[in-house]
Length: 304
Image (cartoon, rainbow, N blue to C red; front, side):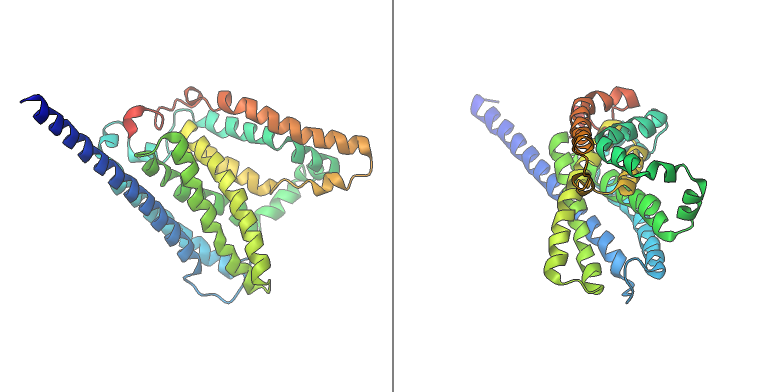
């Protein structure tokens, strides 16, 4: 084969490879989009006249996300490159594995608690810690269906669909950093469905939209953090525990600190918000080292 023919052959192989990669990326993004639409559509398929906090609506949505949780892995199973299955099982890709399980429960939660150092101290200042120490508080909570939705069902179903089933698909054709920032966009956009719930209870559309835009920003940032944790730990339980904790804590609110009259206490609590954020930034990489979790799933070059 002469040089020109050889160059043409190599160019043809590269061109074919590029086309296959582009097709894989388009397929992955389309699969994630379809999963998001199906997840949200399942919440409204019942056409209930009640608000999203009504027990009947919550139970109906529990059933919807249960069915969706059964369907979601099929997108991963049929969408992942066959070469990946030569190294890992579908269960491992979904974050269901034993090695590093205890570390995956404890370390990401501890890291997230450091990030929430300010809000945790504010709760202690307000006396919430004493409430958490009361057994009756927890007994009363677990008897309410809203608690189960916020702390168990929603975090588990969302992390299963939007992280475990989506992120491995995106990692086939994107670098880990790119995939980690693309994945939460679907998660954030999915939360725009709350506009319907807010309008249904009487809120005007403009106000509902502004709240949803803020929620999109917050959930997208959290989604990027959760995707990062999932990729680094290789465990579904890591992001589930962190998601549940964040739902309990809610969005950090500085208004309580601003309302404190004592300037020393106010300055001290403000500094704890800053210390928590700075400490989290420094500890993020060492505390999510894949070796701590016996994880080599998502960071090897041959994944693409």
